[in-house]
Length: 354
Image (cartoon, rainbow, N blue to C red; front, side, top):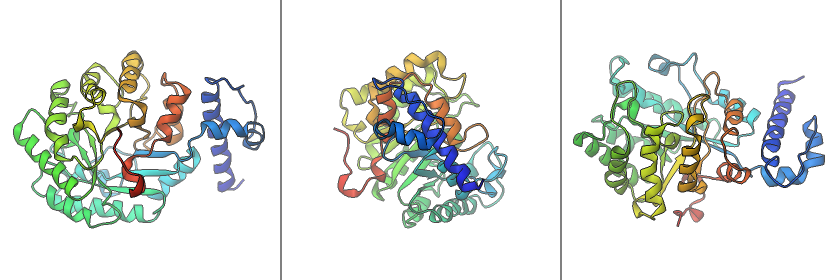
């Protein structure tokens, strides 16, 4: 069997799994078939009604050979590697978030000439994304606390493969929103991204290993101090404000954003969340009711599908299997998987959620 045929068969079985998961919760009869061609023939109507027209992974990473020095990954991951996995899982497009901030991680030693390495990582992502221009969308990355941060945002804004957006990682960069200098530096970065029309994806969870403060207080600073600095672009909080899984501390933070959205706070007008990293086995189940309560409070139209990096155990196919174990309805899964972030929509249809 050729690799192409094998990929088609795997994709067929993956789509069949997704049909069964969703149709089982609807008023349609569950379609039973042993091959994808039979599914199409017997369950064509069901497939059309439950499969999103386009499934977009809003949180994905590649890993360059040089990044292996600062990230615990077994091997480099190229665009070709990712596309192969996307095809198997039936994912149409992916947002590629640069890991360049890793070269300024204060707890690691990436070597000399830090900024040169940051530029090189962003440039590598640009080159990789360019090989699949209709399927991959690149985001630049930077440590917001570094003096060169604004220069790198300016540089990335002139690269068509990176100008869509900016990735920040508060945990990796050790951003502490209890420190005024940190808040001011991040505000300047938000303002710069806004000025260049670059959307922002931010891992807002503070550093866990070093016990940095995180909860409602820090979320309030994010809402009151950071979001107003970027009023014109989409701000996407990664992992539903967690660092993976879902616990009471994360819920304390996410509740601040959910309540702001509920009361139509204008600062949250362009605020979205991706759900990558949530369904990690053993790290969300005990808080399932809190998780679903917050997701419904936020609104499924603001939650974006995302897989996160294709490290061992987290291929898109494996993620989808765990993802569909969340206690959401078929309609809720369908809504999230149909969402497309404003920064990926044609300019003529971009608008904030009312």
